[in-house]
Structure formats: structure tokens, C-alpha cells
Image (cartoon, rainbow, N blue to C red):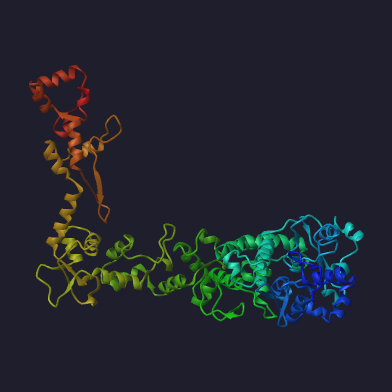
Amino acid sequence: MHLVPVLPLMPHETLVSWTARIARYHANMSSHYFLSLIQLSRQDVVDGTEYGVTRLADLTGVPEARIEKCCIRREGDRNLSHRGECFSSLFMCRTQVSYCPQCLLEDRDTEGASLGMRVGRLSWMFRTVRACHRHGCEVLRRPRENFSEQFQDMEIVAPEDWALKQQVPAAGAMMHSELQEYVERRLAGASGPMWLDEQPIDQAAKACEMLGACMEYGAHCDLDRLVPADWHCAGAVGFEATSQGVKGIRAALDQIQRKSAGKYARGGGPQAIFGRLYQWLQFNKGGQDRGPIRHVLREHILDAFPIGPGTRLFGECVTQRRRHSVSSLSRESGLHPKTLSRALVRSGLIQEQEEQDVDPWSTADARQAGILVQKIKHSIPVKQVPKYLNCNRRQAELLVREGILPQLVTSERFHGGVLTNVAIEDIEAFLSKFRRHGREVSAPDQQMIDVITASELVRVPVVDIVRMVLDGQLSNIELLDLENGFRSVLVDPSEVRSAVDRADEQSGLSAREVANELEIFSSGPSQLRKNLDRDGQPFLKAVEIRNSKGKAKHRYAPAEVERFKKRYVKLGDLANERGISAKAMSKRLRENGVSTIVPRNLLNAAFYRRADL
């Protein structure tokens, strides 16, 4: 037989509250005596045990499934569960009494759903819920006075109505945050941001609050002095970052790092930068699982700080270094910090800093920095390259100057020191590439000579021939033993000469070819190139080509020569066009004040601007 009429559970009501209302509604008793009467312990109600749920269902006629929705069940010693969500007991406020005074006063309406009896809301029981949705005010909390107050019958644990009215102003304005809304929706069975959904709800909420506290109040804020309103704000700030997943959290960590770097010595390491967040994860004496925030911060620290192998970080041993500071790299390599600072800045491994401003805690990618250190250690001065490469000093300097043999670091402001050395591996790589297109022979053909001799014979700089070999412009290349170094590569001088001529032809007409076409002195094209027309442009434009020695020569595009011929006309050609003698044409032009574009004696011909005719 059931108690009638049925007193339904109100939405979001706690099992304790409903049981207390049943006691008063049906028996006009306190919950304590009513539970003794029906032989049910208060702990069965508080913990929502199977026996308690079955007993209440049998007594009231309310289905067990409906009752279970308002249960908060114990799962072992330290964990609880609600609607399939399992969380730490610390996520609950069982050691505190929680209520909204305005909600409890509204419950006194005898015409309302509660029939004038106070209702305890489930949301008040969760530590993250600090604001009342309905009234936009803070949920008030006080420490529990005794163990029996864990049975939060609002008629007993909350103040009398007159006292509640006085507390209304004390419950300051506080709007619900996105974190609170997420917690309440998730407890109701809804889903939210994936990164938060993939972990227990208490871990997700705590990660939001700890991250937000460091963002909003500083990495070294005093957590014990933060009031509920502060934690409410911190949770909202942290949720905005965590809702974007790992990307949003890393951006938040960057923000904390930038703020902290200006206040705390960078040499203090990650604890000085991330403060309470770092300590919360690193010094976890209770061994609680902090959730995936631990992995995100750990990865961030390894990506940003010089953490060496063997360091214990958040319970795990670091196996591989990702970042090196100038200081740690100097200790490991034995190289001077100033040398490393210059090398790291000029090689681009440390950016946005001037080399003189680099401090010992500036970091660089450990793998790339290690490669750079090995290059520095296994390098030789430029003056030793000739002996190693089997060439003369001038050729070695040209190979370095042209970048064929790269120096460790190139800088216009830096003309000496170890960083101007050439790495052995770069010399070896050059030789390998230099020999790549050749064929090995035991006895070279008669016409084949080394690059140095070919340069002298063809009168082409050595570096230019080297580039021809490297670029595959020469097909006839023979190789002697590698021990001959630079002189192990043999070329055919006739092919070199042909390659040079072919390159010249592709770049345009020579001055002699232009002179022949215009029927002027061989020096005439240079005069037309150097002198300017009224528009400030040369009469005849040219392309300057410089070889590796810096010697310049000029080539003229056929289209440019045609443009000149259309714009300017020679006296003889103009006389023929008009059907008069050159002498008569010259006299007529003088009488009309038309002069030559350049003096006739410079070209061996008189040229006029057609626009002046």
C-alpha cells in the first residue's frame, strides 16, 4: 500500500529534501522520526542506496527510475556518482550547508509546487555551482556544524524565514557562468566541449578553475584568499580556454607565461612561471588523478623550457630533451655562452632578439641546436680549407664568398671567430655534389683537365665552372680518386667554352653584334647605354652580367635594339626616306634646330629622334 496522495519529486530536488517533505506532508513529523518509523536510515537516503530507493518507491509509489535521478550514490570510499557521472567526493559540498535564501523563501508559497515546504536543490550540492539561475545571486554556504547536517533538510539546516530575509542582501549578485551551465547540463545527461567530456566531470571543472585562477589573478595568487566569487570568475575564464581543447589551453598557458616572465626570474623554471598550476600538478601528495590538464601542461613545459632527461615532471621521468637554453647548451657542449648566443640568433634558432640581448635562459630547439653545436665542433677556419680541399687560398675564399661552401654563420657584422668556420660535413657534401655528374676513370682522356687549369685556359673564373658542374650544364666530366679533392674533377675546356658562349647568346646580343647591326663604332653601344634621353632612360637599355670575380659585361635584348631603331633614325636612312642627299638632309635639320641624340663622333653616325622630325 502506498502513501496517498502521491507527493511528486520536484525537478532537480535532492532525495533528502523529498524524504523530508514526505515526512511532513504525510505524517507531520520531522525527517528524523519519520525515517525511524519506516525503518530507513538517514545514510541510506544521503547515499541513495539501492535499499533506500526500493523502500521509498514501495512506500510512495514513485518509480525507482525516477527516484534514482535525484540520488547521489557512494562509489567506494572517496567517489560518488549521479546519473552515470562518477566524481570525487570533494566535488560535493557535503561538509557545507548550501542554499539560496530567495529560493527557500519562495518555497513558502502554499499555492506553489512545494506546497509551502522548503526544497533542497541538487545543484546546490556541487561545489562548482555558486550562482542561482533563478535569482542571479550567490548560493550561500556555511561549514557544517555536526555530522548530522550532512542530511541537508532545509527546514533544519537553513535559517528561519526572518533570518533568510536578512540574508538576501548578503547573497550578492552573481550570474551563472558557462562552466556552471556546463556542469549542470552534463549532470542532466547533455554533452559539451569534447576535451571536457572526455574526463570525469570533477576533473574538468577543477582544471577550468585552476587554469582560470592563474590567468585572472596571476600564477602566484594566494588560492586560500580567493572567495567564492573569485572562483566563480576563474571557472568562467578557464572554461573559455578549455572549451577550445588543447589549442585553447596552450594559448592560455602562453598568456600566463608572458605575464609571469616579466615578474619572475626566467631561470626559476616552469614553477616560477606557472606557479600554483604547476604546484597543483607537481606536488600531488594525495596522488589524485588531475586529468588530461597534466599532460597538456607537461607537453607545453617540455616544448618551452630546457628540461633535461631524467627530470621527474608531474610523476613521469623525462626521457628526451626538447629545448636547450643557452646556459644548458653551454654546459653540455663546453662552448662559450656568447658564442652560442651569436650562433643561435644568426642561425634563426632564437628569434626576435638581438644577439647582445640574449640571456642565458633563452631557448632553442634541442635537436637543431645539437646539430649546430656538432657543426661548430667539427669545423675548420677558412684558411685551412685549401689544404683540406686541395685548392689554393683564393679559390677557397671565392667558394666561401659565393656560398658554395657555407660558413657556420653568415653576418655582415662578423668577420672573425669560430662562427666564420666551415663545417667539415659541408665540405664533404660539396665534394660529393661536385663529383655527382662525373664518371670515374683510371686514366683521363687527353683533353680533360682539372677545373683550375680550365679556368686559366678558357679565361672563366673557377667558381663559374664549378657552378656549371654543380648545375649539370657539362656532360663530359671525369673523376680521379677522391684523395685529389677539388682537383679530382676533370672537364673538357672546349665544352666549358661552348657553355659560356651558349649562356651569352641566351642573355642577348653582344656590343659588337649591336654595333654591326647599327653600323656604328664597336664602342657605340656603350655610349648609347650610358647617355640618357629626355625621359631619363638610356637610349639603349642593357642587361649587366657579372661573373664570380665581379667583372661585368653587358648584353642587349634583340627587342631592345628593335625599339631603338623605331624610335631613332640614322641620317643616311632618313635622307633615303625623303629622297634627298644626306648633306641636304643634314642642312635642313640644322635649319629647323633638330640635333643628334649624341655627338656624331662618338658613334661614327648621326642619329635623330623621330619625334623631333
